[in-house]
Image (cartoon, rainbow, N blue to C red):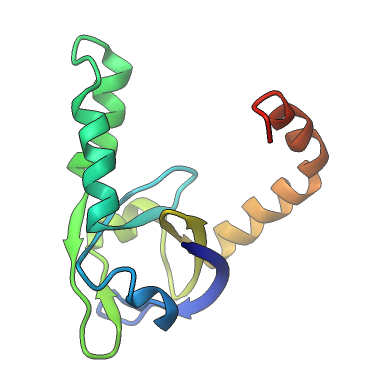
Length: 143
């Protein structure tokens, strides 16, 4: 399970250290892809395969299903860890998410989100300011 918020730095070669406690979960491989809200998603290879099967089952006749499948699958890349627990994030994904030097890694149960620090701070502030109304709306979902 991925939980928590971690500050890291992206080096000049696009390498990012993943918190040591998550490397065991990711030791069989990891996949990074375009996420939502201008961040990247990092999944274990096993979890990504489950999600990819769900995308494959979507009706190709629906434009929104095709578009979201393309967003998540065509932008995906297998990543490997180096000896220091870092992954190299492809340039096209760094550009997509606006990653600079300061990075936030956020654990969201079955995946990690990789955020530019400034983007994360703005998003987090807005979410925290609206947390009561968000909670009320999620009440309808049983949360």
